[in-house]
View 1 (cartoon, rainbow, N blue to C red):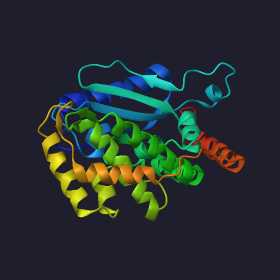
View 2 (cartoon, helix red, strand yellow; view 1 turned 90 degrees about the vertical axis):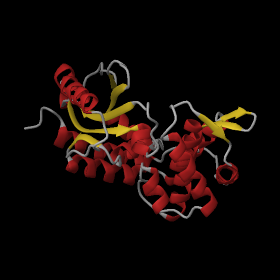
View 3 (cartoon, rainbow, N blue to C red; view 1 turned 90 degrees about the horizontal axis):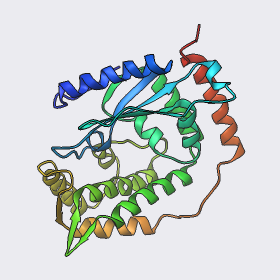
Length: 268
């Protein structure tokens, strides 16, 4: 499975492909899913946005039984616009149980460098089954609220990058009010499936057009409708902590072992 937009730099994409091959060979792992994350996948890239390739990898059965396990992250060097790193399947499942939304987002990225659709579907099903909606909402609240707090540059100006990093969690929180399962990653998909005030939609469209023509750290006047809407949205979310239940952890363990049986590099 591969889905790459025509406006991606072909040289960068070739470099990403080469890195993924090297990751498998150098670390004795399988990479069944590698996607674009960040603003290019979220739907509000700037002219100088990085290429943020993220992937899941699966180790051998023996590696998962090792008394001295390897790191659960594989990172490659940051070079220019290129940022490529990934998570061990075990880390991904544990984070999903903890309420981290990133795992589900990677599985729902619109841009795929390489991927097995069956792996994506299997892991997406497991993530949906072990994710506590309350903890998921708390994740988006903390991400959105932190980005909005750092967007203000004073004198009525805001950093466009921070504003969009706050908008997407806010829209996702409203998506979760009326939908179940794993939310879309892309802002357009979220907006299409969510009730958002017309004035907020208009400001989002204007800001996205501006950001598409502005360097990554560009600024603009604070959007009043977005400011009010996001602040009201974040204020309405319950911030109480809730630990994962033993039932979710048991289900996650069973699902993880099943995925290892099917996707470990040493499978029959």
